[in-house]
Amino acid sequence: MTPSEPATKTGIVALVGPPNVGKSTLLNTLLGQKVSIVSNKPQTTRNRIMGIINGDHYQMVFLDTPGIHEADSPLNVEMVKIAMGSLADVQAIVFMIDVTHRLPEKLTAVQKVLKKTDKPIILLINKIDKISKEALLPLLQTYEKIFPFTAMLPISAKKSDGCDLVIDELLKILPEGERIFPEDIPTDVSERFIVSEIIREKIFNQTHQEVPYSTAVVIDMFTEQPKQVIIHATIMVERGTQKGIIIGKQGTMLTRIGRQARLDIEELLGTKVVLKLWVKVVKDWSHKMTSLRDLGF
Image 1 (cartoon, rainbow, N blue to C red):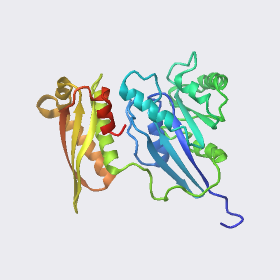
Image 2 (cartoon, rainbow, N blue to C red; image 1 turned 180 degrees about the horizontal axis):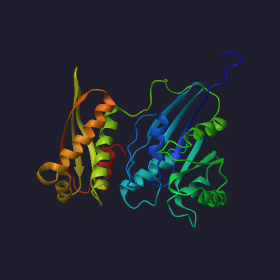
Image 3 (spheres, one colour; image 1 turned 180 degrees about the vertical axis):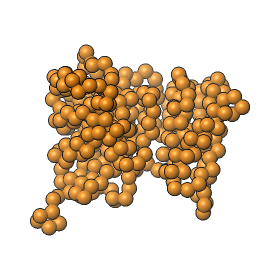
Image 4 (cartoon, rainbow, N blue to C red; image 1 turned 120 degrees about the horizontal axis):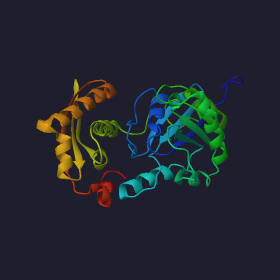
């Protein structure tokens, strides 16, 4: 590095907040590609997803975490543990909220945790395209009273509005250091994992009520051939009625889920994909620690 060349800024950033505020959308926007699934339903993200963003003189490792909430089931408890565990070894925290959510009247579970950390915290107020500019100022003033954030940034992750400011603010915080990962690696999760998440995303977007929350996806086969990839996957549900909903009348729902997932997977892998889906009942899997461990929780 020459004397005139700026030093490389490097660090790990936890992306946290309540469910369904747009954390995964922001990560995909910053990366310029999809590594984390998106749904309009809360608690879509179940695992910690890493997104690695490189610039000429920086590398930021973002950890997209499950939404932090009052957990009431073994699966949700494990999701919150994953989110909270992600705060331990980071250099900065990005706390995201949604302007369409009701203003907090008391400290939430997330805010109580933030008050216990000494890490710099940037507040992102997402979905500003949903409110007027006049309504934004009192919102900023309210959150300014709740916690001494390092910075507060209004953004729209979906429209990429203000997302560059997130990088600018983090560059003021992160320390100098060597890059942690090679520059050509956008995430630490495998293609098999992303494929399973894409299938789960389509289930979330196509089904309703408790069905998407009672499903998990297991990749049984992932075979790369010269001109195509063959993938077999099992969709786990907890009850026979849920299996019937996912399969649909004469298999129409399962066909729709498979078709939508295949298109996204082909874009991800850059090749033709043959996708075969099965549905299996594993009674109350989300309440059994053995099942959760088998799924990587």
